[in-house]
Length: 139
Image (tube, rainbow, N blue to C red; front, side, top):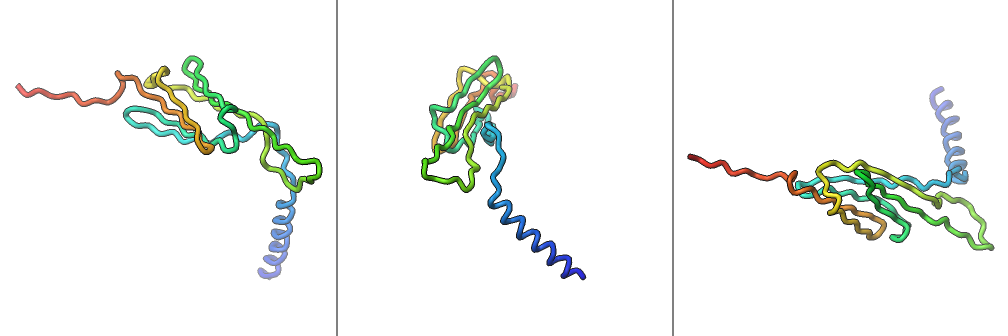
């Protein structure tokens, strides 16, 4: 009995694989929000964003009050007139992510670099909040 039930489901699972392979996704105009890694050292906070396929000129990093915003746009792929689309998952559109900056960050010492689809933002910490050792004098 178990094998019969299992084989029925296995056939449906195989059909589902083929249906999923040829199904056209319904995706809105917004590009997926880029993933980010955030690390901290005594000197800085570093944010690394994954933004493949987006030109440097199409990415904007801005600070307004204590809010850091990374936004951008990926241009939609243009298909040739003689091409027929079988599947399209790479969409064009815009994205935006905002983060509240901690008080420890010096907003005048923020740098951004872009290389191979990775945007790295380095935010130096204020001098007065960096950890330091205090010498203890023995009298």
